Image 1: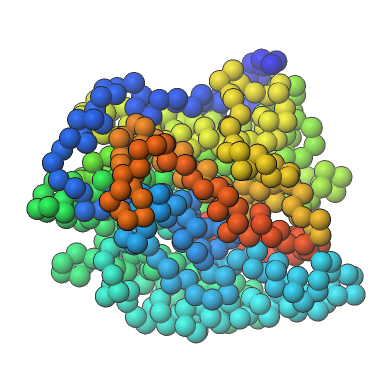
Image 2: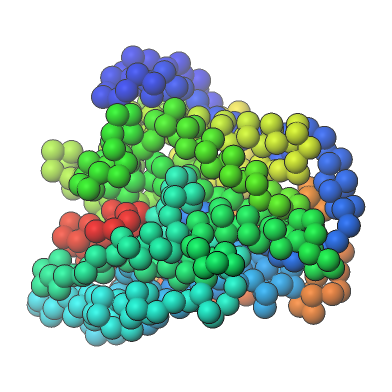
Length: 551
């Protein structure tokens, strides 16, 4: 591999000094030991505590834990927390939001839309069908808007409560939320934030979609007096319920926290870099809000969150690092890489814009320099998270670091797999399960493409280019299960919830392949449907809205 020093041209762009100060030529090597080498015998001591925690698994996070696919939250049974609960023999007990209605969920299910067009127009939309296809998209969007703004979705989210249906959810993740959100918002603040929707003939997109989705997570999260709780406060309440035997001790066995990606994801979702330094993250003008948090701002919010997390009575806590968002295929690298051995392309634009058609004066993009800066800042985020785990373990807490960022690095196709010169010394490819290796083509992190012959590229990301497919979530679940079983000593049981599983627990990827509709039944019309994703992006800012609260 050709090693390169950081040169002035890599810093020749507009960014605050605190950002430029952390930019490095090479990325942060992921930690290989979830315990960070501190008191590796701690987990055995923790597992000798008396009593059985009442709640075996609780998760706090964003869309990755919520279970978003192809732009929508619609089936939380496909989320990685549910996959883990199934392997624990606890799936019937894991409380999660399920009321996401018809029409593919919130805010818009792109796979559902593509298949809707395919049913009407077949494998290919010809030029004379462009008008009818556009009308069909508008009708689909109008039905979706009516359902959530005036129909059953609106009435269920605002006019009624979910609090009486069940206790506090165990999966407390909400798409689009960032670090500060999980300690700032509850069901009451969400309901107060919902504005009366407008029936815009041209801008047909579900308004208040994030609030509706979040209410289904948090409306049952209330204390004994009915006071609404934030996700972290809800986890505190679950932890205080103690053991099954006598209600004492830790109420949660394993707490997973996977949050912070949205403190940087806006940069590729919007293809705009707005640093948080001196910028109001709550600006009423969405285009004025930051898309990337500066390191100092991230650390300040992280410290606030960590102080509250320490109040949660959980036997084991797993904190995840943040993926390099520039690997997500919603931002496709254009042209040849900036130099031999570089990770970066000169520009990143939408995946349906070809190298030949790309025009930096016309098309949305970020530069390779900006991508490097974003990744370097995320490396700083992850150093903070790793240090939090390190300090917690020194204090005798059974905390672990889950290298989600390192996992995506080892799967990064265009960055490392197809470019051996760009690979750092620490890099090794992720060993896929044999069931996935047997697929043709082998799944990768490129943007998903398929035609009448089947899937032609991608497979780990859904049609929004941000969130995993079902098999992608399966890889995350498998890594977490291995950490829980081998490092934390968590016991896994068969479906009866009583028979312990002694062997290493393995996800049934053959089952996941069968239920992953993008893998088992790829859309035949996707090649011709990409133009409609482009239309939705330009006219409705679909990909920006996946990470935006409010209007």
